[in-house]
Image (tube, rainbow, N blue to C red; front, side, top):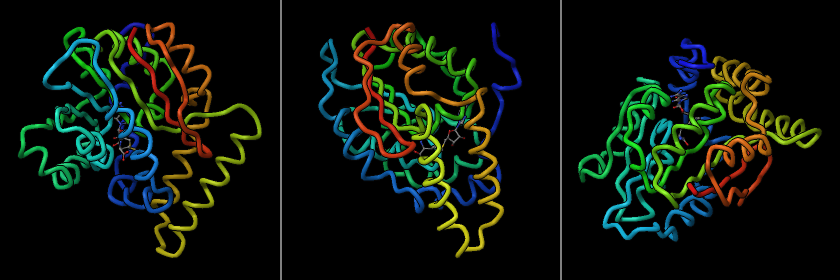
Amino acid sequence: MSGYNLHMATERRFSGTLTSEYDLFDLACPKGPILDATMAREIRRFKPRRQTQVLDALELGFGTGFTSKVILGCRADLRLTAMDNEPQMLPKARKNLKQWIGDGRLTLHVTDALAFLRKQPTRRYDVVATAATLHNFAVPYRALVWKELSRIMKPGALFINADKYAQKGPAQRSAVKARMGRYFGVAVPRQSFDWLKSVVLHYMDDESPERRMDEAEQAALMRSAGFVGVRRIYRMDMTAVVVAYRA
Ligand SMILES: C[S@@+](CC[C@H](N)C(=O)[O-])C[C@H]1O[C@@H](n2cnc3c(N)ncnc32)[C@H](O)[C@@H]1O
């Protein structure tokens, strides 16, 4: 793999308590309303350049299926392929997404994102939607993901990501503090100290130069990978929602 250390490909940042107690994330920072007001709305009004009966959508990092539900729920003419590299997430996602798996509208894969993208045909997808996943990637890995996403998306395809996008300066520090306050607020009364410790360490790693997903830098990278109309449509503390189109 050029410019990229192979061990990062198999990095599982959500193993253990971050998966078994995953619901605490949503309890501390509910993202349902954000996704409904941003991701669901954008996907609903998206018109592909070429008329098609079924929109082929891809999700990176299905987790427990929270975001997959939003993507599948907002359009009946959409078929979703989703992948995650954490095997412990699969039973949770299968349970939460039973209805769509049964309907044949959803396929789940347990695999590394970049390895999966590299196997996809060129210009296959109309929509790529993802949440809270890309910030987990190491910087060089993420750059390779942009290259592959650009290759596998159809011209005019929609990209939407609701994620931790770092800002410059004091805004970032106060956003991290606010987020930590919420996590302590849910973990301490439940005595979920292992989860809390993992979250704190995870966040320290997210803030490192090797991983930090800076909003402005990402927009520049996306443009150079062939995306247009890159814009932020939402920000609340650490979370931003970014939309773009494959040129
Ligand atoms: C914070 S969770 C978000 C899950 C879901 N999108 C949601 O909104 O609840 C991030 C997910 O990305 C997955 N992930 C992280 N790095 C990955 C990689 N390199 N390849 C595939 N999945 C990855 C993790 O296993 C985890 O389930």
